[in-house]
Amino acid sequence: MGEWKAQISLRVRQALRAELEEFAVRERRKLGNITELILEWAVEQLKTAGSTERLLKYKIRLPDTAATGRKLHK
Image: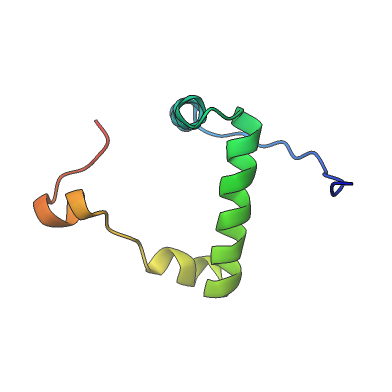
């Protein structure tokens, strides 16, 4: 049998929710499923970094933005 899951509720910006919904549609997943996946990945990154300060200090630059200096968001 699967692991028991606990419910969590949080508020996010409307634009962030819309972006998450877009990814969910593209990935053919439900919003809750993709959010859980991202949250679990983020917690692993935080554990590796040791603190939110260290985690946020090292931002990943995407190839498109590194080469051109453009922002991906409109």
